[in-house]
Length: 149
Image: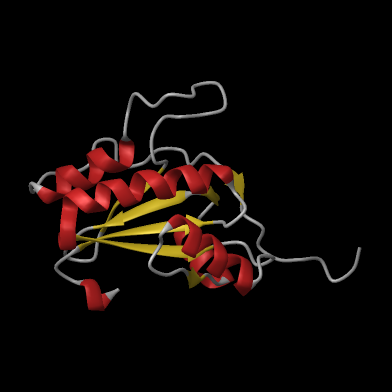
């Protein structure tokens, strides 16, 4: 993270198989075009059961520049719960937002509150995100595979 000091960083706990993460990828990439190099997206593969080939293929299809392999330690440090689960770190390295991309759920299919976009744009103008924390919504993270069935 120290390599990105001075820029806003979005950590996107992600899954190649989650349709909610795929929807978030489209939104995030469109937002990044407007934010330019002021904002960095770090996509982190959260599910231990997804093979490297699947991660690479999904990243290529969705236009993601790269996907980092997550670890149990980073999942625990951030308390990532779902894919996507998004975290925004400000220019000084402080966590300023964690939660959902927007308010879309299974019952509410069209977003009316773009939580992540609002959080990043507040930071870009020197403000603070409000809200700073929302419930993540998406697919459950698979932290490990059982040794036997």
